[in-house]
Amino acid sequence: MKKLELTLYKDFYPIDELRNFIASLCRRLGFDRNDVYRVKAAVDEAVTNVIRHSYKNKKGSIRIRLDSDDTKITIHMKDSGKPFRLKKAKRKTPDEIIEAKEEGGLGLSMIERLMDEVKYNRRKKYNELVMVKYHERKHRT
Image 1 (cartoon, rainbow, N blue to C red):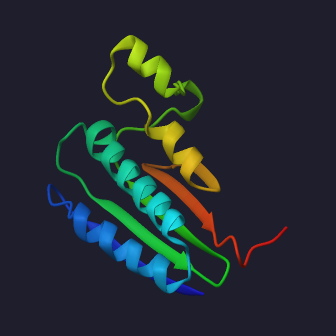
Image 2 (tube, one colour):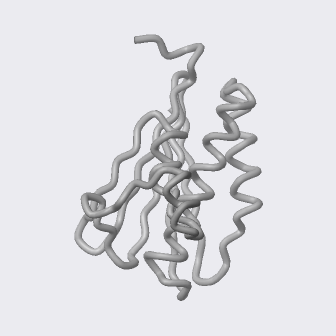
């Protein structure tokens, strides 16, 4: 299993570089173009949610660990911002958001649709999000 850990600090979040790195890793693992996009979009949305909601656009850090093997990529994200209440989170459809004329609101629903597994835990003073995407051609159940 390959592992990589990186930390995005304070008010410097190199989102484009992170997206490009994840895309490169997914391509090397043999993911098809659509799954590369799904993983990039999920990570982008998760980081954006931490910046906007957990830190409320204030300075903070996000630790990201990527684990990969022949069957999947697992992304662990950890931040020390405001706790997220998963059970209270309302999952809205795109139509509901358009009807309410809201901006945003698809984050969690989108991440859950893009990835194969999504888990959230509050551990002591940290939020931890774990997202898994299986390599479809190598993972058969």
